[in-house]
Image: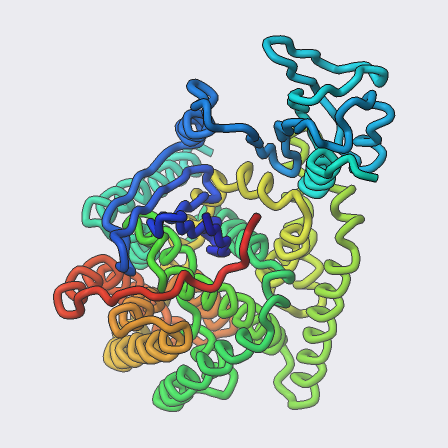
Length: 163
Length: 392
C-alpha cells in the first residue's frame, strides 16, 4: 500500500492512499478533528463518495480496522501508532538472534531504545517482564518506542542468530 | 450604562440574524457583517463597543493567520513560492495601478489598492472547501498552497506599506525612514521568532487553559502595541506574534482555545469596518469598483489556469483552481482599513465593494462552477498518484 502525505494549509492534512489492488482512497484529517474519507472510481480524478467522521467515530472505526474487536487469524504482527510513539507486536521466529536469551542478554533495550512492554507466550501474557525472563521461540514481544526505536527493535528480533 | 449594553446587544443580535440569513442563502457570513456595518451607519456612529471590539477582532484575525503560516512550510519550496508570489503580483499590479490612477490617488493609495486586490480570502475558501466536501480534489491542495504564499507576501507588504500609511510624515525622507524602520522591525522580529522558538516553547508551557489564553492574549496585544510604537500597523504586530507562536508546538492549542473568540471578534471587525466606510464615497466609486472587481476576478482565473497547468491539472482542474482563488475577504478589508485610517476614503470604498461582490459571487462560483464544468469537461483519466512526501 502506498501512502502519501500532503499539507492542506488552513484545512488539515491529506493522505492519498493507493492499495495494492490499485484502489484509491483519500483520508483528510481536519484541524477541527474531523476525518473525511473520499473514495475514487478507478482512473478518475474526482471522488464519487465522501464519508465524514468526528474524532470519536474515527477512532472507533480505526479500532475496528485494526482488529481490536475481531482479529483475523492471518495477522502475525501489528502495530499501533500513538502520536510520536508506536507499539508493535514482534513475533520471535526460531532462528531469531534473541531466541533463547534473557531480556537483559538480548540487548533490545540498549540496542534499539525501545522497551519490551510484555511477552505473549501462547495463552499466557507476561506484562512488564523482568530482565532475567528468557525469550523463547514462538513468543510475541510487545515493544513501545518512537518510530526508529521500534524499527531497530524489529531488526534485532528479526535478525538471524548466526553470529 | 444601560444604553451601552442595549446597544451592544442589538449589534450582536443584528450580526447573528444577518449571518443566519446569509447562511440560509448558502453565502459566506463575513460579507454579511460588512454589509450590515454599512447599512447600520446612522445608528452606530459613536458606539465605543464596536470601536474597541472591532479593533480586537482585527488583531485576533491577523494573529490566527500568523499561526497558520509556518516558516518551515515556506522554506520547503522557496522557488515555487517566489514564482507564485511574483505572478500573482504581476497580474494584479496593473489592476491596482489603473484603479489608483482612475481614482486620482497618490502612489500609496495605489499600493494599498493593489494589496487589497491581490489576496484571496483564505478564511472563505478554506471554509467553502470543507463545507462542499472538496478537500480531496486535486486543485484544492494547489489552491491552499497558493493562499499560504499570498497571505504571507501580502502581510509583509502591508506591514511595510502601513508604516508609510500610518506615518504622519509627508516628506520623501520621512517616508523612507518609516519604511526602513518598518523593514528592520519586520526582519528582526522574524529572525527573533525563528531563533527564539525554544524560548517561546518554554514560556507558553502553561498547564492551565485559562492562563494559557491570557498569556496568548497578552502576547498579541503587546505585539500589536510594539508594532504601532515603531510606526507599523498594529495588525502586523499581531500577525508576527501569530507566526512566532505557530513555530512552536502550542499552535494547535492556541487555535483550539481561541477560535470561539475569533468568530465573535471577526464579525465585529467586519462590522466595524463596514461602519467606517464613507457612504457618499461608496456611491461615487460604484462604477470603477465593479470594474476593479471584474478585473480582480479575471486575474485570479488567469493565475489559476497557469498554476493548474504547472501542477499538471486538466482544463477542468485549472478552471476550478481559478474559481477557488476569486473570493476576497480579510486581507482586502485590512488594506481598506489602513486606507480609511489614513484618509483615503475612496480606496477604502472600492475595496469594500470588492469584498462584498467577490466575497459573495466568488463563493457562489466555488459552489456551482464545478457542477457546470463537470458537464462540459468529463473527468480525465489519471495516470499518476500525486507528488506528496511518502509517509511510512
